Image (tube, rainbow, N blue to C red; front, side):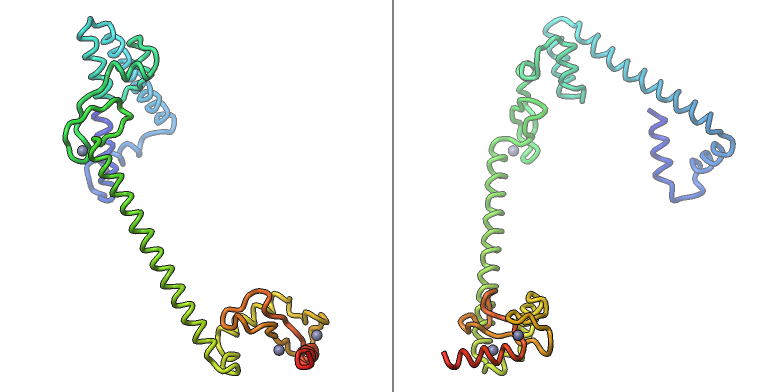
Length: 244
Ligand SMILES: [Zn+2]
Ligand SMILES: [Zn+2]
Ligand SMILES: [Zn+2]
């Protein structure tokens, strides 16, 4: 145990160069060989293993106590240590975790929120008493509701702004409309989608026009509303539409 403490102190003071632990380490590193490091490592590993074994022996010895002391020890080990449930069940001759929980619990434990004592069934049970659990759940639900309401309001506001923007675009004279960033974006996208060729004759020559098949969605053109045409096809298209 002192070894661990020392080790922690060393790593905490890593930034300061002139600490005693730093010079201790310097001295150590000046003479140590890799083989010696390996030896120390093995020695300390053995110490850990033997400490583990002695903990194990302690539990085994305790399991031989007479009732009611035996039960009190089991409860103390269960609630006061991290010894696994399986290990405790095995050493104390209990079949299964459910049975173990029945024997060691419930235990009055302080609630992690209000600190009032409440019966905890097992180490895995909630650390909150029932009223706090209900309160937390309803707080979470309320937070979710608030978040949802905020989200809905945000979306509604966005929709409103979108509609306003579309209406502004629709109110423009057509020549002005064609100069807007909106139209530039929409028409560029249409040309790109048509792979920069006329969608009727597949020609790539000259300027590609983006023709409105319908003006119904002006300001908010949909996929099928536009067609990309070369100058010739565009003129023909308007001729057709004029005669139709
Ligand atoms: Zn509570
Ligand atoms: Zn064409
Ligand atoms: Zn046109």
